[in-house]
Image (cartoon, rainbow, N blue to C red):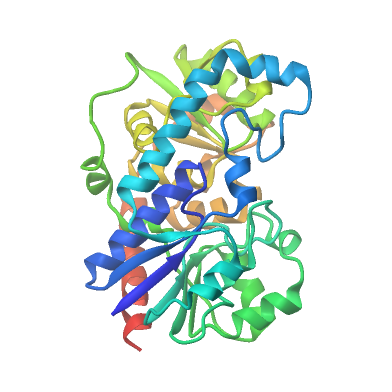
Length: 365
């Protein structure tokens, strides 16, 4: 059986590339060939250029000046993502638009809308291709797709969304809110499956990258895909409580205001896993950093995790919802507490088996 996946594989985002890698390898491990449809629209390419901020150009001289001292490391980071893309993923040739995909008249037995927020219609790099309207022949499956952290606000043009969803043969999503919205739009059942990142065990991930720690000594890893003040404020509070240094990997001008946080920008997907593995504690505003912390059994806090339907679904399932923190919470009590990962590990192992069975059954149907 031949399969093709479409997802945010080329987004210079740790979770996006790692989940694309994991889903492709999970499919190959169950005995089907897989290629990723290499859609890279001009707007997505532009938003990840070194020195760009969240898809928006550096509009004024002050921002340009702030970025210049870090440009060498930002270019190194860009190169690490591009190397991962070219060396670690099996892809088709590159397409710049849905029209180019249609004209290619792809011929696979099955097309899979992969994980990540590809059904969230509000990001600047959203494209209708992620709903598979170009498919003429072949089965359509979605696996662990998300409509976003606040999907009821982030899914527009619902008539078009409904039309595309009704063409799928099997639908699985990543969190409760997306499941409810899909079912309300289509009247069909959607199954919740694990994010592809969790289809790999921590031990499997550790075979993929160099185990030598990139940072000497003990440290806190602080990560959120874009600047979130509450995440950085929480990291500073944890730093004061623990006395540990804090490491940040994203470049945003406002990050530079936190002089107590060390910036390490030249970090690609494999380097990020290395930093997470060796951190003493992770302060996260990122869904993927949260699930990787759980997978690696690392102490973490999920900033405002209860308000993010993606984080809250996995935190509830693993019994770790108490690790969601808000500014009014006693951070010290949370980080001083012990974490019993036994239930979380059992939950992930059980759900991993169910998720792989979903893929097998959907492909075999």
